[in-house]
Image (cartoon, rainbow, N blue to C red; front, side, top):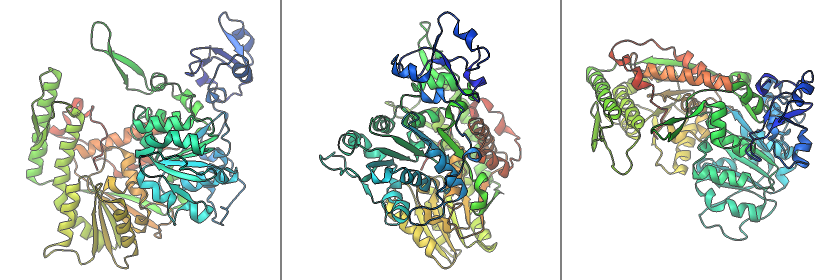
Length: 596
């Protein structure tokens, strides 16, 4: 019998179903081919029903995205543009926005919602608001959830909601859910950190008919409190439309989609284990003779079926596809030769990591202190940090410190080449502080304004204020920040004509997010340059391999998701040599970790 993945383009005129559980979505569609439908139908133990009969007469819930797999647009070019070309206040929508709006408007109560995974700076908030406005949802109760950093994006005087729709989004604050706090017919923004205190009250008192989830990649972990609260809110029967927005919908691997799709389409994806087994080669690894073990999701399976189920519920497009609406982007690698001291520390760290790996393999107790190449860690006995985190932090710290002395010269060269406004991203807070000091103090200090250091522990309003000062500066200027501290909503950085990353992340999405603060709609420059400082024959080239792997995985889910692969290609790895690359077994378990 054919699997749904082989027939997802065919119209399901009838359905042959084997039931798994009532609500977990485990029933399997075996065929929809009219030529062999009668043969399959006659098989013992197979029940033949239509979607309507399955739900109304038998009381079984079969996921909508299984019945309609592959029948709705899955890529931007196949989405017909919505007929409305402007917002109510006259802002003209770009072609890709109108196509996205058209697909969002196909969302019905049965399909529940959609994840719009479009690159940063492509106008996703307008897409969500426009589709809600056209179908009358902005005039009814609604809720927006997202990170605290996105609050001003939705609630501020200069927000898209206020400027282009006349919609006042009211911020929810505090951790005490007050009675009669919500007024029906209004829209509210509740950030993730307090959603757990408010989601029941939002349902009970506001009864929102629609829901927008901003930066939905922050809800990937189905075991996190914020995911559970968001999912609980999404499952409220009053909500008729859900739109999730993300510039990086697959931060690590395809299992990240589950946490988001389970919120966009409640009851349609089963459990995260169901998803992992079907689409991520999920299996249990046993550690005892009794067979006890833990779940491992280490592959990519059922790709064609996953693509079919996502059609109409997941729209992914990148800046490559909307290039005519944005400034041109050029990427450059700047090769940095480490000094002898940094090289010695780097190779010593590799030796220390080998020894540490052997300790783990032999089950020896962890020491209270661990050092990799001089980067020391204290290991708490109550909750030891993951080995991957220690190794990642040590190697990145050594490379970051080794490149930092070159950063001032690189910035001077970029200014001499004609760049007027440069945003510099570091990995560590300490690096941002050291760099700012070298740029502003001493006899070699720059004769221009330097803003920062902006770090994750700086008050959000201060970060925005410094970015706005940077944008208004009439002369040349430099903005120094840790990469993670500006990944959300600081759109004033779009005034820059160049950005520089001293230590790139191992996850393409983090690098692309940083670029996206500059490379976006509204940047006055026709060309934006993105520079990466890389040390050949070190972990930096392994990073490029990881970027390429991530790019391949993203393309498997959506053929439009090409940015990660392009990033790796643009930076053109120089190849591997020497002692650094005798450690494939160690490097293979390093995750993509970003420390703000």
